Image 1 (cartoon, one colour):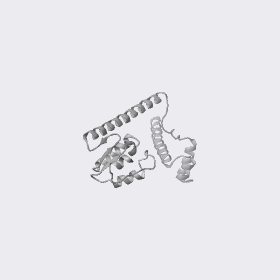
Image 2 (image 1 turned 180 degrees about the vertical axis):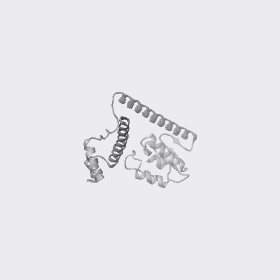
Image 3 (image 1 turned 60 degrees about the vertical axis):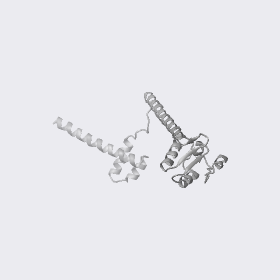
Image 4 (image 1 turned 90 degrees about the vertical axis):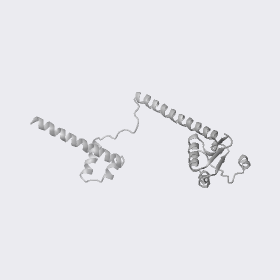
Length: 184
């Protein structure tokens, strides 16, 4: 705070909550206040954002609006070529970090799949209970809502399974008709 006062800034925004949340009231107030041609002076990158990605996003937004950013602790000034260079390095490091995480994640998924780990929710089975409730619905004895609630599945899952069931029934009827034709 003292360092900022020495810079003779026009307005100081002080956040009282954690910097890891991008929807902080003072950050939003600062973003609304700052105008093209202004320079944002921060004590440290960590005072503006808790991670490189958020910092770069905020700086990119400010740059698009014609605002320069100076970080006193890290000696970054986006108005200078050196400051832009350091910012570019941060961006490259962030991208490398993200790509490395994705690569490790994909490798981990491949290893897990090789071990037989199944991802995602288990498929909803079209069992006897489903067919019984489906038939009651088709006969008009209950509504679709009652049916999927009895089956304890979502509306979307119910209609997806109905579509599968009806498509399979059409295929099975066609196959049965072909078999009957070939027998005759």
